[in-house]
Length: 501
Ligand code: PLP
Image (cartoon, rainbow, N blue to C red):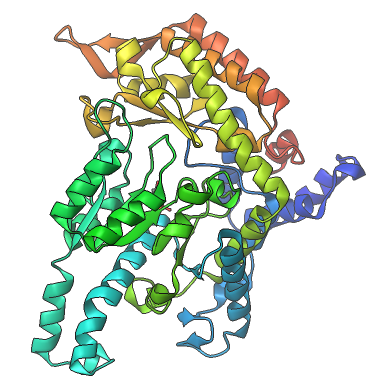
């Protein structure tokens, strides 16, 4: 029997065959030989992603080049430490890969130093927090004791340092105002290692109020002032944050996980460029940056030696294959076409916000300056965010619910939907398609009602979805995705025939 790759190639016109296509299918064929069910799941996920309109603000589509870079033998090598300073021998090639990724990141963002090992955004924040604690709390005590190796301290000396490390303050953006769990949420380790305080957006405007943040920072006197967000739709003035940090004696850390692509693509420059102002910047690589799932840290020179100690501080062996994929993605993000992409992401978000407002929906803070926007579905449709999310999914639209500032429906049910444009922009959509997406969202919301509980009250989870609205929305989603096809070089029907078991 001919192999799936051979069958696929026979059925495909030669001009549509590329190295990326051949390697993608060949890899899957190898996987299928060992684990057919895993290959099936990959194809099913491809089908799901191709048939749903992806509006999840934290997701994107990586290039086949990035995907190809992940699958190689670098995964077999242990390389604890950092380039030219490893706990294992024979790391020259991992050094070359890690140096290439770090140098590309430094150049792209204009940073003094880059550390590309963190496996995820949460890991990156943990490494950064401990690097700051090491630099600002541990190092001065060690210096006063005339010692460089903590293992050589007495029990009492080490206990004194541990107490100091555990008694520091973090001031970050409140979860309901768009902050991330790692910015001091009590369920997260960040609020367990720090005494965590949070600032909010203004109740009136929904915007950051820098004077109020300054006042609070002067009272709290945090070691770390954290800026950055998962769900804040506006530009941030990082110059102002740096002024506040300097005034209260804090280290300024920025988590740009969501908007790194807009920084790389020069949408955010000057006061809005966090790399210029912050001492330490963390980011994921898989959101607007459009790379593999992972993260990296950028910092000013005085923090470089501490950030480099992610291993042994928090991490174990780096993932050489994933670092290779980060290098490829960072190189792609250094091309002029990526600048164009990043600007289109923001233009699309603005067009979508305006179109949703035109449809009579309530857009939090009145619009957006970045890649995401928040819609209050409780206000206009009496739905929880959870119900809105479910209705969208049942009509072929993937997005996620999100709490809004001071949300009365809490963090689980929420009142909001978070909508992002990175993925649809990667597919090539522009302003006319944003108008169509706004229409689809309106049709779905108008066709959705909360179910009624046994007590006669509106349910927070269950919905009744009007079949006519659902049919119309699905038809429109299919038409849109028929014009903007995910990975058009891959023939889904052929892949299904060969791999679905
Ligand atoms: N920081 C921010 C601002 C995020 O939005 C996220 C994820 O959504 C993270 C950190 C965590 O990233 P990861 O899921 O890669 O750990």
